[in-house]
Image (cartoon, rainbow, N blue to C red; front, side, top):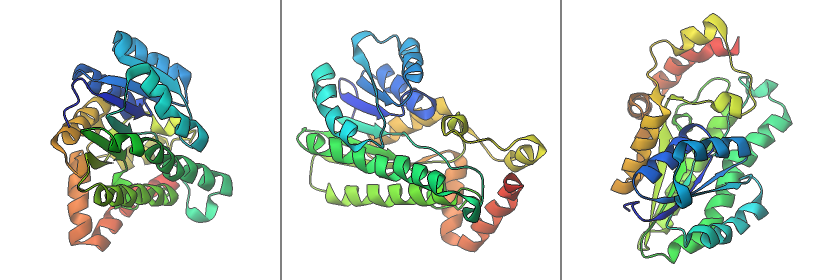
Length: 268
């Protein structure tokens, strides 16, 4: 689906990839509703966009099912019927092993990443099915197929998002709705701070990241929107996401050992 002249909703639009997706869609002529939990982030996106009445912002928590159910009508009143959804909002977990992860952290990750995806998709899908052409995009992660030490619950939540989106793709065959799942590798964003998680620091973090390619948030947004307009089911963001997907299929044990060796220092 070409985005020019279309109405799209972007969750997580106040920072990181979500903010850059908002800006990229606006550059391509779309009208955009940006949704985020943080009003200051939305205000920052609006200042960068300077898009006049083609951008509206909504403060909202994707984990709040009632708030998300009410959102399509609010967007329609502001911009018109929604043609596309790009669900970016998500968080990571504290960098600890599963045995050390408390119940509150587990619940929070699942509430935002999995329940939030269900809430947003279920809210907007009925309206998308009524449009002559529409697109639903969920952002998963390279962590959906490559386990990262200290991010096991996060990876499980993103694996669920991947399979959920693939299921929606199957269910929407023969309808007007295209479906894509985005699988980013390492992207330069502030997801650690935005997740309320302490970032590993010092020499250990520097060593873990050495040699890993990092995609800018701007490039990630461009790749995402390009893939959306091309109608791809899987949109891989970054050379690392592509290469590790291939390795995890060909030699899954080797892929796990490789990432564990590289990232184990983050656990101390």
